[in-house]
Image (tube, rainbow, N blue to C red; front, side, top):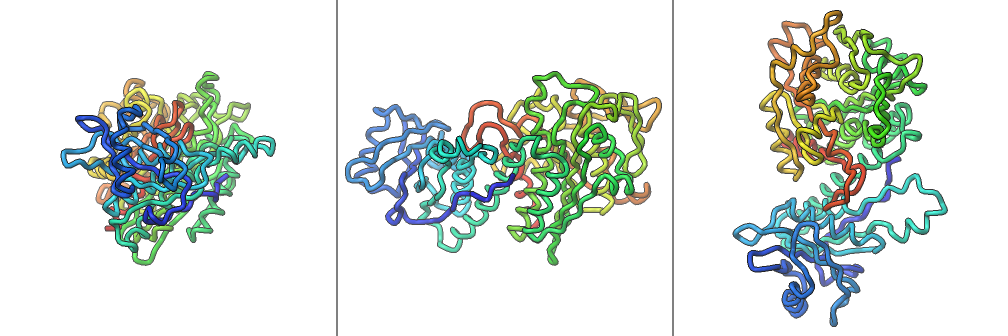
Length: 512
């Protein structure tokens, strides 16, 4: 399920490369397209710059042009990739470089190697180009049969990526490429898991895959099966999973360095397939429901990346896994569940199951009194209505919420701070239980967050949680986790791996 066949990343001067293709950047200037490359031989650069408009090159983001190697060039292929509009000083940002690199490398599927001679002068820019290139070199082929193997191989992603960064000292370049390799691999790991069919990825196999990979990364792992979940009072996870022949799981993974400067808990929604349960979804709404475990995959990948980067931060990841199926054993609307920590929940809609499994995991995570807890979930269709398919909605305690958004800005991802209006909590009141799993439909993304907030510190004594409440933030990735449109930049069709980079950036910030 998780591929180990990732592209190699090296830093080389252009004069030393033997790559099959060379990628250079073109910006969209006020007076037309401008070639931005100091690495090309001067004669070739001048000739290219003079031909840009004739070739129809504009330098816009996601624009890629492939040209045969010019006379006197020792590279069979030249690729011009759009960088968008530069700033007043003629520079482009790291995200523009990341996206341009990804678009170029995507267009080179079937090519063995590529050198990227984009305008790089700093360690940050080098890392951005390397990340974009490595994320652009992605394909999911794990479930292809031998009959299509040869065809798949002919259009395989670029296997060797060389980054031209003559202005970055060699040791700093090596460190930047290591970080880029770890982060891109984390993103692609999420894509692999989300793209895997629910016939192959269900709670037991998901837990086994995570446990095996976590142990390889020297992470501590604990898995709760259905008996252990029952014994430890995880009523929400058990209830959601009881309609399936494939029982639920809870996985805890931990990166615990001796010099940890903080303790961050991450909670991920791992619904391996969501039919809606008894409150059955329409068929068209089920087409992408293998992606309903993207939050858990994101948490796993972020914790493993923290270990590989040797960040001095203790990180605990909680992955709540279940398959939400209708059957004679499934939960029903009006059922009441007793959650971890004792809170009772009236189930008004079995398709609002993600918040139920997340609530159990939030209680367990905050029982350990971390410095902060963040949860990641494909939680609501309302997120798409509010923010579309590329922005993640971030809610929770103001300071932590804003830290997440700032981390997303640094990482080049799109996140938007949203409130949790106080009046939404009363819409969750139940006449027969402590709380209902459904409330106000309008602003449903924020209503779901109001539900989750009730379970932060819910297992701790009241006086203790009042004196030292755990800061909490909720990330709703329902839209941006799965791209149903055309690929763009370094983002493929289907699973995207969104928010991994943001979480890693936040952990790096906490590491100082």
